[in-house]
Structures are given as structure tokens and as C-alpha cells.
Length: 209
Image 1 (cartoon, one colour):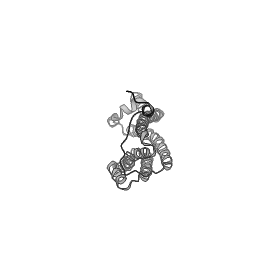
Image 2 (cartoon, rainbow, N blue to C red):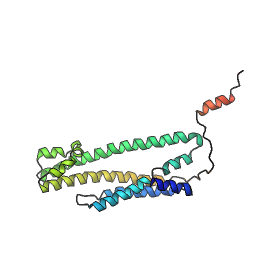
Image 3 (cartoon, rainbow, N blue to C red):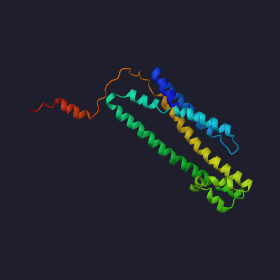
Image 4 (cartoon, rainbow, N blue to C red):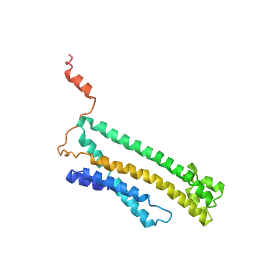
């Protein structure tokens, strides 16, 4: 999808629709993740991932093109760095926020594990911060009823996380509607870098002998 967006922008110069379609697909993919359960088929999971991946792929380059087209040439470097910083910050926050939501969900699910007869020592393995690290232990549970209860707790906790991500992605759709299309320049202009004030001072400074 990254290559596809590059070809489309190169040939048409249009990028707004790519951003909006990408946000819609990513929101749809996040929303479909909410329906995941222990009984979801592999085919359904792959379909959800493809939809989400298509949306995310459409959002690699077009936002960068949009922000560079919207600012002056002298501000291009600043705008590009700001976008990169925002993406990295959002990536880090998403991991932390998602992790906290998941851990809280597993903490609340501890009661259902006890009700299903899961021993306290095993329950501790699937509670809070221990849950993500011990996901591989689920397959080692011999009792089928207990195993299903643990899987249900994982699915419920992940569901809460995907709800938050879908809402945030939906906000991205609204933000994309406010993005204004700028006609891309077909003429290459040499970029002059440096501090603007120093350039002005140099221009007004009288030559020295």
C-alpha cells in the first residue's frame, strides 16, 4: 500500500482521498477487532488484519505530503520533524495506554477465573502485568473449563483496548475531513536551509574590506 500511494500521488498529485480512505479502513479494522473472541476463526482474523493493514499502509506517506504541501519551503524541515515526533509520541503512548487497559481488564477478570475454579497460583499468572508475559501458558492448562475461562478473560481485556483504539481512529477520520488539498508543484525548487534571521543579517550587513 505504501508503494501504491506513492504511484497514485506521483501520477495524479492527489492525496486527500488516500488519507480519508486510510482512516476509514483503519477505523473499520479496529472496530472489527472488537468482535474477536476465543472462537473467532483464523480466516476472520486474517480478514480483519488485512483491512486494518490496508488502512495503515495508506497513511504512511500521504500525511507527510499533505503537511509539506501546506507549509512554506523554509518550514518544510520543521514540519517534517514535527510529524515524525508526533508519530513517535503517539506510538509510545498507544503502547502504554493499551497495556494499562489490558492489565486492568485482566485484573477485573480475576473474579471470573476464580469462579471457573482456576487455582489462585494460576490466577496470579493471568492477572495484571503478568498476563501478557504468560499468554503462552494458556495452552498448558489441562482443565478445559479453566482454559476457556482464561481465554475469555484475554478476549474481554483486548476488546476494551480495541474499543479505545477504534474511538481514537474515528477522531482521525474527523481530523482528515479538515485537511485541505494543495496542488503539488511540478517544478523542482532548490531548498535553502539555515536560520532565517542569520540570512537576513547577512544580507543587510555591509561587506568588509
